Every structure is written in structure tokens, then in C-alpha cells.
Length: 329
Image (cartoon, rainbow, N blue to C red; front, side, top):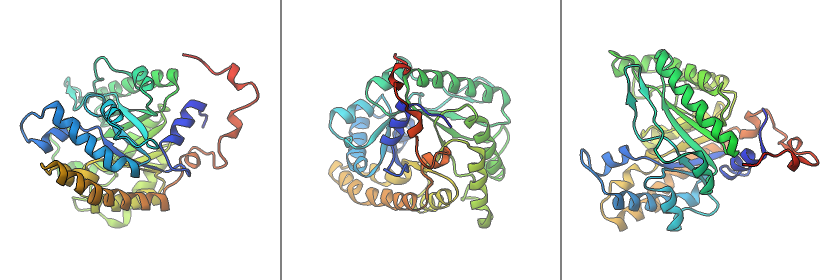
């Protein structure tokens, strides 16, 4: 795979020296509000405070942090919460999704975009799409929005990280969807990674909360790895930490280049109302949760350059006079 100097540098800044991603997500908005005040509103100041607390505790132990522009990205920089060595990934999509009858559709945050994410010093753009290959029209629309964002990312030489989350079809209950989920996850990876963005944030293929065959878990992760020509990392989807640790181990043993996790790491901490108690819980239990995952990723994950077919690195992408052809803004 080819790669530009700017994108390569950003991937290096988001990973370990060996090219493993151990990233913490704190870009949740609707989900975080539901955790802090179920069914009610949460003021900006509270959202900001919680995000600053999480980032202060976890960014020193993460290769990068995923944040949103509405409550956390600039705030954590300004308050000194984001560790200097940690990469910054910023969301571009609005929380939740819209529906036009064809499926669940992503919307971009108004008055925000790739150029501003690049300008604020971020290392990557993140776009979440809800996707089901059998929802043909909505799938087409989701691919189109990915293409539009990717075009801007290439213009500004910043990586695009795409996260895909599946969902049941109309009339399909959770159990029925769980039975089809492995195929949905693999097919989604095939369709989306073909667009040529930089990192794929994937669901674990099998829903472990429903009956499943333990012996097939590694097989499904290998199928996911084969479906994705680009580096992929596993997401947590808010599962309990013990289950996510298991998913990280299996995924990284079968091709993943690390993980990007949020609620599985810190959800028990942010439920604490007293700030001092919350901060203490984050510095202890949440850090422990993150380190359990990181140790497995560092032990088993495939470095992103190896997944890209470049085990010896990228030295050959730079030749004498390279700067004369490097495009400006």
C-alpha cells in the first residue's frame, strides 16, 4: 500500500514505536449523557469536566485519545489534560443517526470539518457510520459520505479512521441479529475498507452475550482480517472489561493492530458523582482496565506497517527532492 509522509507521521504519533494502537475513546456524547443523567439533559460544564477527568487519567497510558469537538477536544488541550505524547483523533460526525426510510445515516457536525481538525493539531479524523450491507440504499449513502470525508483528508494529508457499527434489520430481534452478525461484520469490512481510508475500527465479529461456538472466534477474526486490506483495530461497544479483554486478545492474535475502547475502560468511573472519588477511580481502576488491554495488544497485535505489507518500513517513499512534489494546501 502507498502512503504519504503526513499520513505516515500521524499514524506513528498515534501508535507505539512498533506501530500498535492502544487508543482510548472519549468522544461519546449522547451515550455519555445517558450514563450521567438517564433520560435528562447534562450541561456543557458537566460534560466538559468528566471528559477532562477521563483524559487526564488515561491519556498518559494511551497512544492516542479520541475526542469530540463539542465538549472535549479543545477543552482537554486548553486545560492540559491531554498528555503531550498522546495523539489526538477528533470526531467529525454528529452523535446518533438520522433515518430516511433506507436505514441509519450519519450526519456531519455543522460548522466543523477536516480542515479545522487538521488545523487544531489532530493526528486523525474519525467518522462513525451505522452500516448493514443488506440495506443497499443506506449502505450506498454511507459509502458516499465516507468518500467525501476521505477526499478532504487526502487534501490535508491527515488519516481517516472509519468506525462501522451494524444493526438489526426491520423485524429482526437481537437474537436473530446476533446469529447473522459475524457475516455482517465481515461483509461490512469488505465493502468499506475497499474505499481506501487508513484505519478501520471494527466490531468484534461475534456477540458473546448470545450462544456461540468458542472455537470459531479466532476464525471469524481471521476472516475479518482477510476482508480488510488496511490496518484494523477492535472497538469495545461498551461491553464489560473482562469480555473486552478477551476480545482484544483474540482479535490481536488474529490480525488486529490494536484497539480503540471507551466505556469498557471508564464507564464505572464516570458514574461516580463526587469528582474527587471519580478522579481516584479513574487513576486506579480505569488505568488498570486500560493496561490489561494494552499488554495484550503489545504482545499479540500486528504493527500497522506489517498489515500494510511494509514490514521493513517506508523508507522508499522518500527520494531526493521529494519536497518539490509534495502538495501544498
